[in-house]
Structures are given as C-alpha cells and as structure tokens.
Length: 244
Image (cartoon, rainbow, N blue to C red; front, top):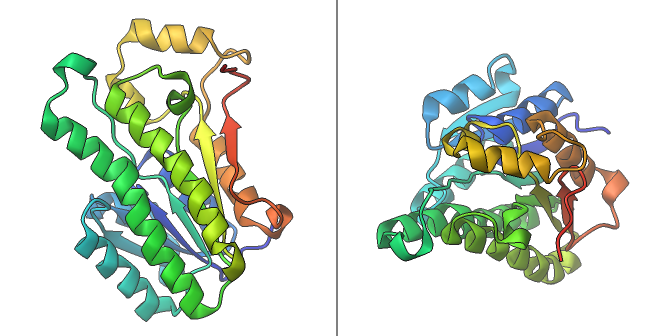
C-alpha cells in the first residue's frame, strides 16, 4: 500500500491505537500529523520522522482547538489525504450513578470530537482536491451494550455519524468508514476490573485481545486504494465476537 508523501492526520496519537497508527503510516513514508491533548506524547509519536512528522496539542472536544489544528496542517502541508479519529476516553460509571460531567466529557471527546474533526478534515480535503479517506474508531461496546452507558452511546453515535457523512461526502470522493475494535491491549483498558476483563476475553473466539498494530493495519487498508469502493461501513476487528 503506497502512502509516500500522503498527509495523514491521527487523533489520540499519544498512545494505544493512535500511536500505533501514526507509526504504521510514518514507516510507510506518509507525512504524519500526531494530534493529542498531551503535546509531549504527540511529539514522541512522530519522533524520527523529521519534516514528515508534525505533533499538535489538540483537545478534540473544543471546536477552536480542532480548527487551529487543521489550520496548522493546511499551512504546513496544504492538503489532507487521510484522517483517522482514534481519540477516545472512558469512565467506569454505573448508569444510575453517572455524574453529569462524566457523561458530557465522554460524549464530548468520543462523539463530538469525532464530528468536529470529520467536519474540519473534510473541508480541508475538499479544498485540496484530495479524494480522501476518513476512518473513525468505534467499539464493540456500541453493539453489545457491555460497558458504561456514556461510552456505549458515544461509540454507537460514531457508527451512525459515519454512515450519514459517508453518503454526504461520496460526491466529493471522500470515503468514510468505521473500525469497530473488540477488546484491545491499550492503556485505556488498564482501569477495567480484572473480572470484567477476563469475561471479555472469554467471549473472543480467538482467545486473546487485539493488539494496536492490528488496528493500524486495518486502518491502512481502509485508507488505501485497495478499499476504493468501501464507504459507510463498520468494520469489526474483534476476533470473532458475535452480537445479535
């Protein structure tokens, strides 16, 4: 898959899936933009890529911060070819005990953040004339309902957002798809109780968690010309987990 000199913007790039995605595209010769609320983590993600790497501090739930990040990309590279929205947070809250601010925070990052980045990213793709690809990241929790209500709702919203904007942006040659990972070996999983974790692993026919690099490889496929006729789809990467 050829990504030499393609401009690839990744949110949540400081760790986990986002960092793996940045490294995968960077190693393939892309110009990689690592956006993360932690500026130091973003810088570490693009270490070694020289002028082809750009680290940005970005709060995806803040419209002004998102616009500033994409304006910087426009100034530096003049266009955008691929956007991957992997920024995400969670919080272990029982539904009846969920604080209002936790609900707003999770929805703000996972769903509103994806919307804001998709909007600014698509505008930049259209401006640069690129037939771009947008890849959002949801979760099997959106289908199974296993997990805190705010997390499940936010990730289900991402899937609906993808289907809607894929139809709207198709005429511009911009494809939009969602990766739907199963339990993945990332720092976000560290806060999940062990009993819950073991229960999730038992539900995976392949008998293990996904690795971030496996998500990166699927992202690369969806961003490539090999996936040129795929848009509006939710691609499950979950080791065979099944849902009704």
